[in-house]
Image (cartoon, rainbow, N blue to C red; front, side, top):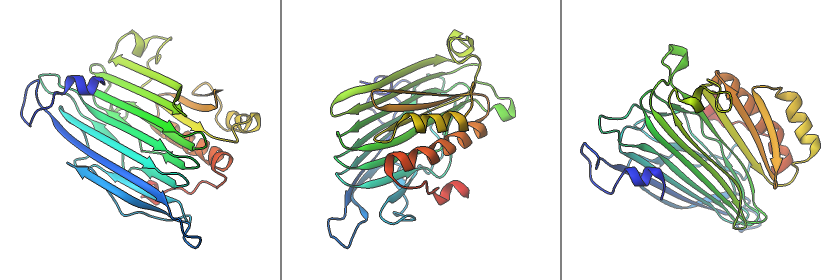
Length: 293
């Protein structure tokens, strides 16, 4: 059970500790089996509450680009979004969002709000999870939980980018709470597991062994072939420290940013994706049109 589930009991709308506004979106994508097809098709769609997708786009041939929509534009206390994506064997899928997500300040009861994402990729599938950043407002009680499950031959690139407060307006994250979990499994084996529990202004937020006062952080995860020393050398040359760091272990490449500028974080992650995608997926990076609007 996640913290979001524990703090948001199954109940209807209202105020107080039982406040709950759930929504879910489940997607299943399959590769077209016909020799003349070659496209990945959306074969399963189930949703409830304010979660939708735009129609599939195919800007690069067979890869299916999907834009996930949350019409309210942000999460208030009691909001619980659940997103589940199944990329069936051989499919090629890229998922992103049209704008930044927002986690607003909590209510007087302190009820949590947040999002759970469960991504599964079958044998030979190629799955990319590239949402735009999440802005966590001062006073929020946010939970971000992302779990990736890969078959042995699946390939994955994904990221999670977070901005604490709104530094451009000098609205600092001086109070509030954020819990973030990132997990990646391959073939049932846990390869990467990270959990952050942060209170605004606490020692972890301000201390050198934590975020060192940074308000913007991001993690890109990549798993698949091509994660060799040559690629890591290119990435280190393109993304010099100390704001960006790179590590590779157990077949999982991590690109991290810690600093104070989301534009630098976002641009660096786009650049990293542009180098990683040809190595892992064998295709050049085709930027989703929605990023440029």
